[in-house]
Amino acid sequence: MRTAITFEVDTDNLGSVSEEYLCQLWHIGQANPAPLGDVDACNFADHVGREIVRRWVACTPASLWTHQAAHIAARQQVGRA
Image (cartoon, rainbow, N blue to C red; front, side):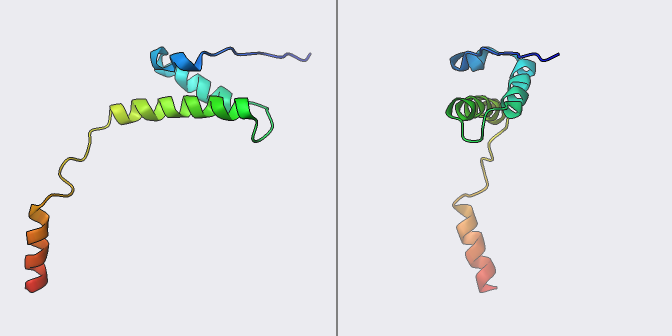
């Protein structure tokens, strides 16, 4: 038996889908049997991947104090010691 399954996805609406569904879409996009470089397949994977990254970044706290002016003086003091 041979079966073809088609998925219809509104990539403009990815921000409102559940994380579980988004993960499923990632796997669908990567398992897509389209040839390497297929425009639709690549664009779909790109949209899904960017939504995953957008959500991850939104939940990841920013590093606020990695570089600050006080470090300049501290580094200069270390160089003089």
